[in-house]
Image 1 (cartoon, rainbow, N blue to C red):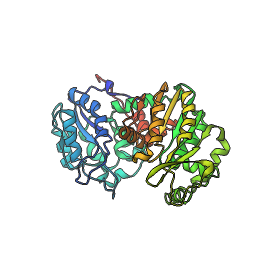
Image 2: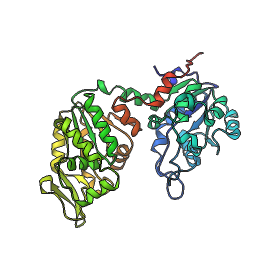
Image 3: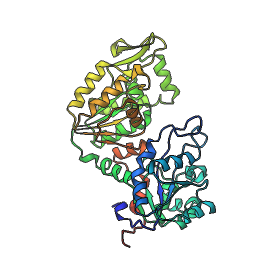
Image 4: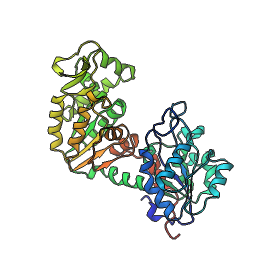
Length: 406
């Protein structure tokens, strides 16, 4: 059983709060999208309003990436969202960071520096070892409790996620709590249960397909996007050089054999596109599978009308739909149709769950609403939807406890 904020006596307590505010960064270093920051407003506001002294821990980007940057813009934006001053310190576990945390008064908040500026945070450890990293040993002494609200990173076993709850009383924040309530009970959702696997993360999607079909979690798996293209090739369809070269360049060629094995084992439950859309003379042009390959240079960019009709019939009979990944290149107006129509069809189902990451970004871009639950996590959501344990959640379950009033 995981403790939540309801179990934490917040007033006067110094709390380290791990959030996931990893966001797109503009060319000028500003935040290009604050959706992930807004997701944590309820948790942070509650802690501050209840008199907590809040030290925010987070990462931004990956080492060497264009979005690998400091968290000063995040602190400024959180100040706007929370309607109160939020300080920033360019340190995470040094004496400067400890001083900043120790000097907090009730209801005050400071954002510490990007945890991934330190090499240990970009490594994965068992919880006991993570608790002995410089990050945890340096910062834990000035904290009374730890709150994990970073569901989107919960599939990682990094020090800020599994080390702190090993040595401090740990609690789930409101985002984490909501995600676990929904995604942790996927086996109890209404049947038939349909998974829509799209996007370009082919290995992850095939892993998910194997897991949910083996465990009997899915009645149907609908494929689209690059995932759908891989299944088409696995079924012997010639998609042409443009689509095949993309799959090869992404290092996904071996996934075609895995998809073929899946079709051999569970072919009756797996659906793949009946037609695709390509760019021809600057416009959308749809081609039935039997008429492929397309002209030279034409790549499959979306599913076509025949596929949408076929998939909608399956969705109409579903009790639960789980969506992960777009159906095509939705950023291009010519190829957003498949994603928009599939997502809209899913909102008519009793329970509709969006698996976060690129899927949530597509929703915001297309303005589609009406889902039962939109996850903040991509990889973490995928693991939960296949009933796999999450290291950060396990660390909260196994760590030391302290309840309200102790």
